[in-house]
Image (tube, rainbow, N blue to C red; front, side):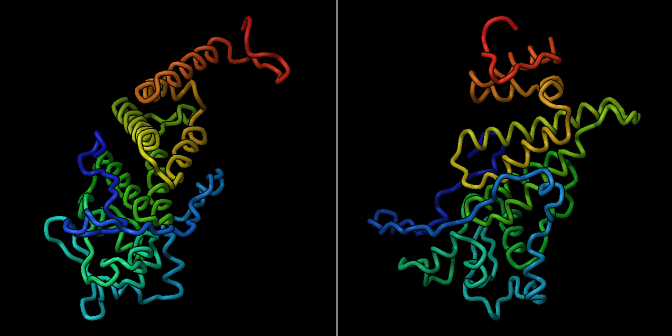
Length: 291
């Protein structure tokens, strides 16, 4: 479990989804197919990235959402949470997810079972993932108003998208997080009158997103780099740069908590930029000696 969210976990149980009585078996190693994950985001892409990447599926199959939780045509039941169940279709699940694809095409018992267990993820997140596979846009659960709750929810969405290898769902979560960062950043040059508590709250939320992202990628093996790319881009597309990030969200403290050397290096670099921002060095000039 990640320390900042009791619900946010990256589980290794999804690959085979075996019952406890089979855990001691010597299982054959499955070769994972090549998965083309998100490439580094360019500014133009992140600003234009669609929040509903499943819309292309709806163009070809406009009635696919009607099959969501359809017991009459279902061939697998997803079990999760507190005895909650969803009726699903293997062909749709394996078409969207690398994990489901390997599981249902393997020689393991999970391929023929009519139930599949999804462990260690909040029920709302599982519902969102399955609805997304069936063509629905990524949306926050009804009644979720607090920005902090939305941030945790979207990080949970990214976690399950990474675990089940659904890159487009990870991109959709990243886009929503990017939009939250945009709403948190107050541009001082706009000369808008903004209450101080709103400014401070926005900075806190901005810093929280950066800290969660840094913690995630520095402590876990995350194949999909979409979220990291999106948050880094937001830091430099929406703000004046390192000095602002250090002054407003204490960036070096965030990094130092995870990597002391990098955090202190960043703090020293920002200090020198603030002391003499006009100083530039040609590439031929060595980075030592007098500043």
